[in-house]
Image 1: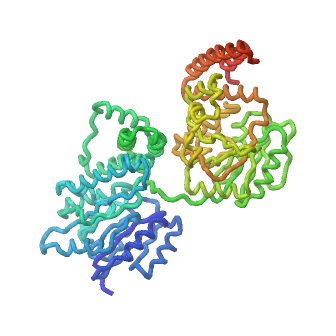
Image 2: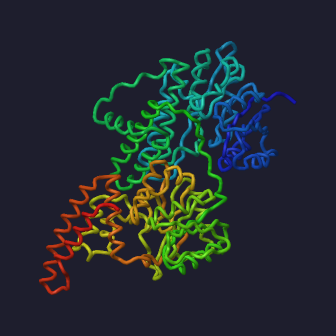
Image 3: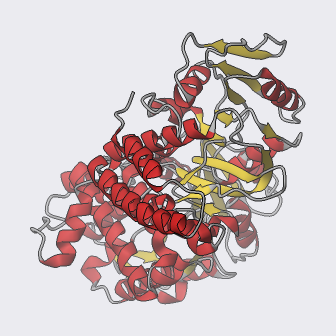
Length: 615
């Protein structure tokens, strides 16, 4: 069998969704000379090998399987070593070459005059985006700028674009020592630099552009990649000193803003968290400001990456389905509602571990076959009780469910399915009361203005209007469509167990209220998102286990403690005290008009709530 003229090397890991489009495109290619596709399966984490084998009769395919996970440079080195073609072409698994693409690459090399320097041919990638605010404001414009820059590069700088798709004679590749398998990132441009230094003429051919189907879809992803890209310059510069210019001191307001944000980023996860915050506010920004906001986050992440220099290899792999789920039900008081919920949990179509955490109930929760009961000696409140139950959880994910919920038999299975779409996220189902009225599950992080609006008596008449809900911090968009929010109410929450434990669980200083906000804020800093789902739906009776006066006291205590951690308790107390003054005036007017209110008694009660110290 003759040696192939061209070898296409495809590195892949977790590519079962990306590979079919590429393989179909390769199956449509035609060459007059023998050719091959060498797929480097860098650890079969998702069943990709079975998919690849199904193309064996359509594509001249060979599979090189590795244990994987050490970086794309090592995977490419293995693929190029296995390649037999005179010309080797790298093609990432998220590209879509048009028919005739391989023939055109080979033709460029075949047309090289005898005795001329060998050729390295770069295909730039044209990103394909969904129609999103990120794509319109930043994704497409940034890709257009990159393409224009690449096609205008002088010859001595073209190596910088040696990336996702390119071709070079195998002899030239071997002469420079091939890929450096110790590089987790920049393995491509680092090879391009050595090829150029060896005398290979690198061309960037606009006629050989190739479609790229998996660009960063949002600011969070783009910022995370920018952090790693910035960090990779450290290892690159160790091998090639002086390649990247030294960073200058910040100049101008923009540079200072970027530097200030970069100073708070110490990891890829923190870079992604900044990007998520930008994504969250993006729809609310004027269109003219959206691109600037994204650019600020991306540039800050890159600057931070260069400072930190953490090049730990991270390949974005579709998360494996969650196999095990624990349900923690915090319980205190009458066992009847919890027993009813337990029956529904044991009847779920997806198996679950059920843990009931009894918070020192006067009537102990009864032992029951099929569930675990964790008994606390003292009543420590919601967070402490959930922590006790979570300590016994053995699942990969944990559902924290109030005892007064009503669930469909497919509820857990539906949450597992949602977690496939949102693999690193706190999730909350849609929630309605027994009359079908939908709860405001998605919320904005508490701000003083939200708490003042909720405190003011004069605004109560507007309760139920969209303006009022927005004023008190309800995310009104989450009432219309599934989406990311700042936090979700704690009556029903899906939380990855490892992340819950990594942040220390709930802060047990909160007795009741604000503990779930505090937890989700810490989880977001760890890199998780928070999503309010539109399906499934649970029915929540709500609020029946404690007197309303106790609930208000716990609410205010929780708000003040939260302000201590994340803002200013004093500012909140002063603002709510001023709102109490307004309430006093309004209630006095209402009393004069004949309403049965007690202005002074109400005001004194509100001020006592504000002056309480945490217990």
